[in-house]
Length: 323
Ligand SMILES: Nc1ncnc2c1ncn2[C@@H]1O[C@H](COP(=O)(O)OP(=O)(O)OP(=O)(O)O)[C@@H](O)[C@H]1O
Image (cartoon, rainbow, N blue to C red; front, side, top):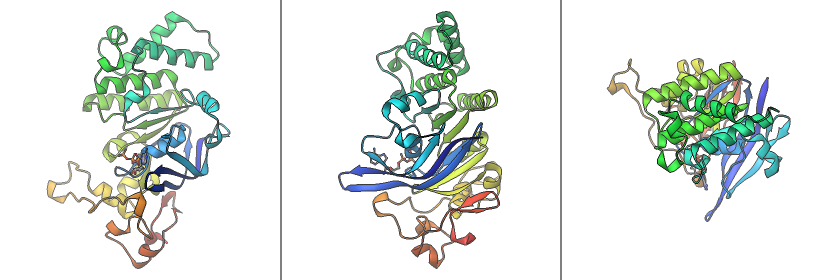
């Protein structure tokens, strides 16, 4: 069952130098319980995509075109009041900067309690303080925060970055949304905690059929959690498919470059290949395929005409090599 359909989504920003489009015609569906890794270099539009889906774009951003269908409604068209009812238990986003999700003048306990209240009321349950406290303490234990009783009395600024991130993840565990968007959720955490959080996300999917959009620049981490991989470049989907198939047989030269630059045990240091150059500015995007200036398989047509995202054997790929 589809829980989200993003159709032909284009999103831009207004800046002093003028308007520019970041997301360009992004289309993908999300199935119930599916974990999708969204990868790409910094600036490829991953966070913009996440913020668009939960309708929390910065004030200078605008939806140019397209639809985001969730629960029979187009998120793009929802009023602030309507989207408020979707956020939390419908769609929840863990931001790259977790402090943005917390209120600086309220304790952790207060904020997790609010989440429990929202969850109970949307599930049609009567609020029970004792039960709520138990749910809070369990969620704090689940994210491996030390001294749960003590930590919930604290304010966000009294916690480390990694602890704040775990409080936000605890909030997600309480709310159990239909869709969880996690933007680099574990980058502030050390490797052992990271592994535990990845396990928790998988458990959430198993128990609650939560769909997760896991945004990261770290393909190896995504490989440990996702079923499917979407590769973004310059605000476009370049490749999309089953994660094992994409990792073992990447079709797009950009995906091949990203995977070729992952240090793995089997590769000796000297064999690591990095993609030359850097992503283009959205103000002056190249003509044709946006990756062509950095592509080692470039052919004439790539410079002049942008390829469409084509479906080939269960995979979508935007590249002239497969036309
Ligand atoms: N508030 C903003 N105002 C203007 N431009 C913005 C704003 N936020 C993002 N952008 C532009 O959108 C582009 C995509 O940014 P975005 O944060 O979505 O990429 P990303 O792939 O998530 O990168 P990162 O991995 O660094 O977070 C950026 O290069 C930047 O030019």
